Each structure stands twice: as structure tokens, then as C-alpha cells.
Length: 147
Image 1: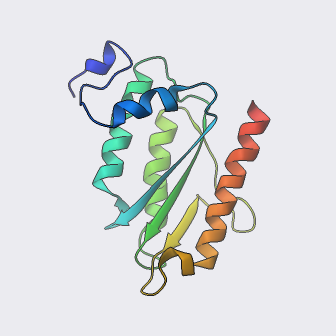
Image 2: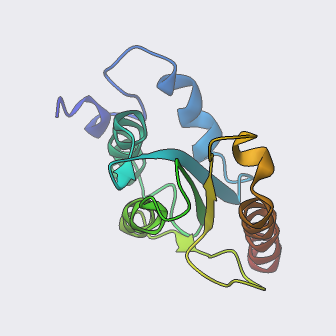
């Protein structure tokens, strides 16, 4: 790592991530959902780069601490590694001392899992869409209770 973020709340890589830093660090942002496609049972390289670059928040006062976090993963098939992916991203959230929630009732698991299938994409995955709605609802409920 270049360690530029140890000096200030900036990233040494000049791209769009810099625009997200003040948004995610904002105290009024109480919840964060990270979504990613599933590639070979894990998050995409782009999602991993985002997660890794979030170290800027740890190095500058643990700015994600106590924010409510949730994860959404979309695989090509129903059991295509979505839960493994949710766990990977949740582990990163826990490293920031975030409060992770699942999708709540009725399924009550690790987060939202969808599959794109062959026809209709995620729009045809009614069960998956329900987990996504439930995840958003749970994040809002917990964030409101904490704030």
C-alpha cells in the first residue's frame, strides 16, 4: 500500500473513489449496502479493490464504526457462491467495526442473495428480490434505532 491515506482522509489513487470518501465518512450516513456479482464463489475484483481501499476510513479515526452494513450478492445460478461472497464482504465490514445485519424475516440469513438465471435476470428472481427488500428494510430499522 502507498500509505498516503495515513496522512489524511484521501486515497493516493486518483479516480472516482475519492468522491465516495466524504459521502461514506459523513456521520449522517447511517447504513451502507455493498452489492457485488459473484465470480468463482467470491466478490469481484472491483468490489475487492473498493473494500481494500476503504482502509482510509480505519486509518483516519475508524469512520465506518457503528454504521449499519449489509451485503447483496448476485450469482449466475441459485447456489453459485452467494453466501460465501456475503461472508467475505461482511468480514471486511466487521474489520471496520460496523454493525452487520442480515435480511431478516422470513429467511433471516446473511444478506440478500439473488441469481441472474438464464431468462429475465434478477428481475425474475422473486425470492432473491424479497431478500434484497428485506435487507434494505433491516438496515433502515437498525439504523433508526441506533440514531
